[in-house]
Image (cartoon, one colour):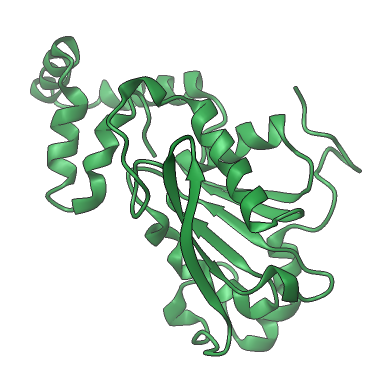
Length: 237
């Protein structure tokens, strides 16, 4: 399936970046590096709401900065889809977008962050994460939205846009792969450059089915929230 086209093969409407240009220049903030330390402090009177959304018998946590009902004319909410094994925290610097008159919506995918962490290995597939985006949109009233995906979240966003593009004003991708086959081929090329003993260790754990467990143990030394990473076979980013 193809995303409905407009103009030269793009989704209808300006992108978040295009809309931001008129606002950011007035605030002295860099578009290229939108980190909080380089951007104005959040305005204290912007409403913030958090909660849980029922999803397939579990709960998906969300955080909305702003109010959909009070969205500034000519702007649309931003829905952010994070990568793995991180949570919404990885995209938190983008909170400042709420100062441009649009709500900014974060959520933790099932198995991450504040959301429930099911133990059933049979539920983990792409359709679950694509459906989760749709449920978040419906429950929060995001009829028209800028969809932003980072890494693994970008893969979810692409799949969602290809199958449920209605109401998507723009699609913004950061460090996301559009082809699993090409991505795997690139990773294999990098793997061949590793020292032989490292390649042997990887091969041994792959054959034993313990590679993800090994990687997760190493990740949790630096990222305590990475424990859910191993629950999604074959997913990273």
